[in-house]
Image (cartoon, helix red, strand yellow):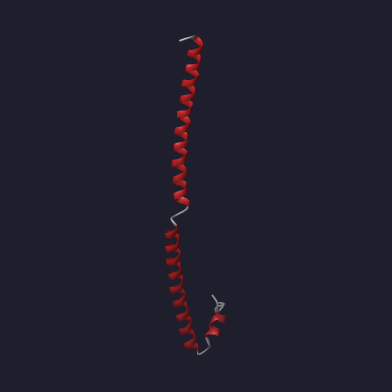
Length: 93
């Protein structure tokens, strides 16, 4: 093997080492990206289920509030609208 062939072989070996290091870096980056994506974007079904649960909770609390406002209106013998006004609550809230 000539001196020039040995130089070329070393260059190729160095390039192969760099390629292997870059491939390892790419794999590490892919793993980190997958981990970050998993934290940022839960599965769509999980998001929908969470929103449904929160909506049900909100509706339950709203219904309790409306019932309490009804009791207050009944005790005061005034329309519900008056109780909403007294508590500065919009009827659409």
